[in-house]
Each structure stands twice: as structure tokens, then as C-alpha cells.
Length: 304
Image (cartoon, rainbow, N blue to C red):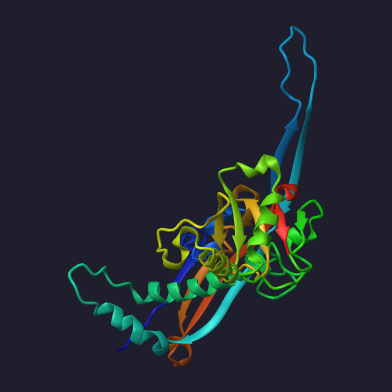
């Protein structure tokens, strides 16, 4: 089957595809996403105390209102790769022949290749969100990366020692105690917030399920997909890129991911090399940006 394709998306058009790719990173469901950062974004949060007083006829200043500011600076990233068309062509052709009247319309080959690139971007983003490092090619600094993560370097974050000492592996026998220590350290002003989550890796979550199953709670040994993951009333966010043996308690509105979907530098390009060098290769190019930041460190708990 002869097939040629050349597509070029830039600015808003590319932003649509980049956004779809990024949102495949499962952790973004539990983070606040800022989509149109040109260079950097100042994240501002206000906290006040003693502001409300009994009414009088005079103006009398009272209380304090403090504003904290954190800077989110996305890092420019790219994907440049060659792919032989035959590598994807067989699976794409199989999709064209899906049986059944209710089958969705087949995707164009261009869209199929872009979805392949989307998986590459999503997987890289998921990893960087938690353990990335700006100093490493192809990564941006995440939340809990060793020595550089925003939650690791922020001295105001509430640090809680891992049961057994720093670096001790979570196990079914200690995961409950680690979770209890985590929730006990959550600031009172944050504890009742609707968007509060405990973030953990799939490995840590499996240990938690194993522990409560052994204890006979909520029929965990036979639960189905309708089960809402919670601990002591706090929702659990299972994040594929999260570091093992680490827990984070934070509001979704306090953990940020930033990118720029409208920039002219944001683009996706598919080039058919057959027209240039006679090969059966496609050249895939993507340019986008990504970065993370924490709003108020003191409202966040880190168990490591």
C-alpha cells in the first residue's frame, strides 16, 4: 500500500494535539494546569488572620494579609525521531477494518501517528511531574525528585519521617502507619478542603490495598472498579510517575503544571522522507513546554 503524508501544525492547531497528549499523563487529573504561560507565571496565594472585627464608625486597620508568590517557568522540550511507516502501518490498517456497525470511524494515518507521539509525550511528562530534573535532558523539575524536587527543596513543606527511617521501603506492614503519620501532619486549615488528596505510586497503593484487605476492611479483597480510594476520608490519587516509598498530601489547587499551548513555538510536524531521500521513514517533530511549581509549601505534607 502506497501512502504518503506530510502534516504541519503550529500555534493553536498544535496546541490542540499537545494538550490531548499531555492530558494522557494521568497525574494531571489531580493537578492544576496553567495552559498559556509565555515565559513564566507568578503563582500568588493570599492568607489572612484577624481581619474580621466588630463594626465601628471609624476605619481601624486590623489583622494581617500575607501574599506568597512562587514562579513557574516551563522548560522548552522537543521530540525528534524517525519512524519507519511499516512499523505502524499494519496496526493502522487493522483499525480500518474493525467489524461491527457501531465501530467508530477509522482515524487517518496522520492522526494515528500523532497519537503514537502523544504517548511518548504523555509518558515523559508523567515521569517529569514527580521525579524530573531540569538539569537532565528531556525533563523538567518535578515535585519529589531527589535533591531538586520542589517539595524536597522548599523548607516550609511539612516533612514527616518515613517509618523505619528515610529511604525505608514501604510494605504492607508499615504503609498504614505511614499514611496515619501523613494525615496527622496535614495543617488544620487544609484538612477539610474538598480538593485535598494523598498522592502515591501504584506500588504504594497496592501495598495499602493489601494491608486493608488483610484487615478485612471494605471487602478490599473483592472490590471492583466502583471503589473510591480513600484513607481516613481523604481521597487517594494514584499517580503512575510518583516515586515509590513517598507520600504527598496536598490540595489539587496547590500543585501546578504549566505549559504554553498557544505559542508559535508549539508545533507538531510529520514529514514523509520518501519525497526527500527515497526512504520509507517518517520524521516526527514536536515542540512544547512543561514545568511544575508548588503554591504554598506549608500547606503540603511530604513523607519520604
